[in-house]
Image (cartoon, rainbow, N blue to C red; front, side):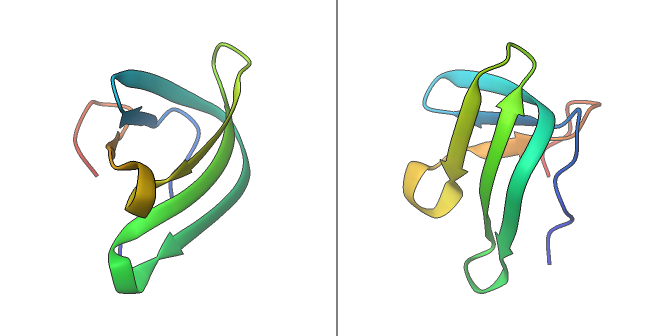
Length: 66
């Protein structure tokens, strides 16, 4: 199972890099090895990411792919 995403991690999806500032909702889809995440990024934008549908990946604070 993937670890939980946390503040400071970055979501990269469809050409957008958004660093997580606050997590509103998080659910790892273990059976799909993906995440569903609702969060506010460091620019104050509220975002929703369903990795299974939107694609993309997450990076930890050091830039390593999670």
